[in-house]
Image (cartoon, rainbow, N blue to C red; front, side, top):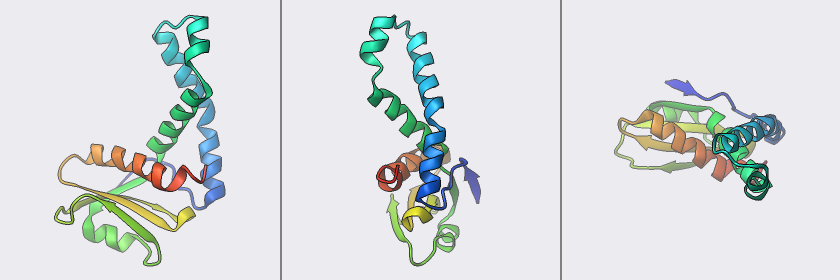
Length: 136
């Protein structure tokens, strides 16, 4: 098993706290990206909206969610029996990336064959959408 990412909130309060911590970074990323795109002050004001910064915050938070990769057996042993489980992908694939979310008593997973990095990134977005969007 291998762990990727750093955010593994134990409850809703911790998820909200971790989400809040990435706010300033998201604003900086958006500002610096707009600067690299040579937005003048007017274009920045017109195009960089609160929704743009929120999208950056969502993506940044999602990209920091802890995901574990391993075998299907390791996945099945890692998820508490009482948790709801949502798995994307095929049952015929041996490798699984997963995120356990105690805040929602849920685990989300994605199977993959060879592209572990892609599976991790995909699962982080899935976890945000299925678990954390409503919490934060």
